Image (cartoon, rainbow, N blue to C red; front, side, top):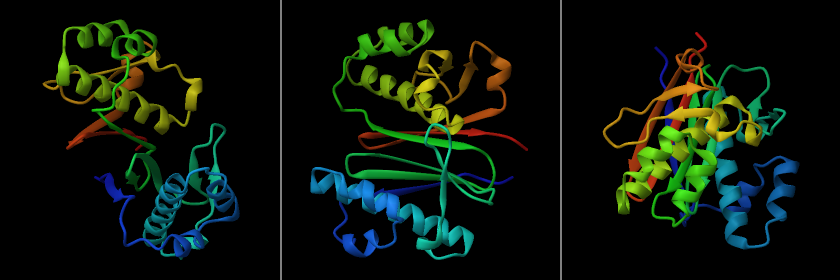
Length: 216
């Protein structure tokens, strides 16, 4: 069975030559890079996109600059004419890239120490069951559970390529630390969720979720 590959990138790495990596990007990517107001955001974008190109180039046996992206209706990138599936996410100085030989895939990463209004956001974007589980927790346990839930939902939406058109509360995932990572339902249907798998990784201050749709 083909397996998912997860690659972590340190966007603060001093080893990266920003100008050299910039030259690997397509003209539309270079245009996006130039639009960033702050140099640190521009650098992070360039490194992440160039590393994605290098990784895809290695997988496809072509030069990084030869990788041609096409974009779905809601902006999800893919490579024309190949089955290889991939997704990129980043937060602060960390980026992650998930790849699978043929299954649609989505990845999301968040810093669980980032302060947000857990209760307000959960009521807006989580299901009633997820919200109730979150309300039973406090402190770090609550923070981790919130971002565990959030990243799992975001990873699913990114795998679907649905963007913001798919409400987060239309899918339900496991939340608690002692629950196996899983998508429980999609649009209130457990059958729709049956062909999906979910992986969750916690690395220091970061929580990563990978959603994969088995199309075999």
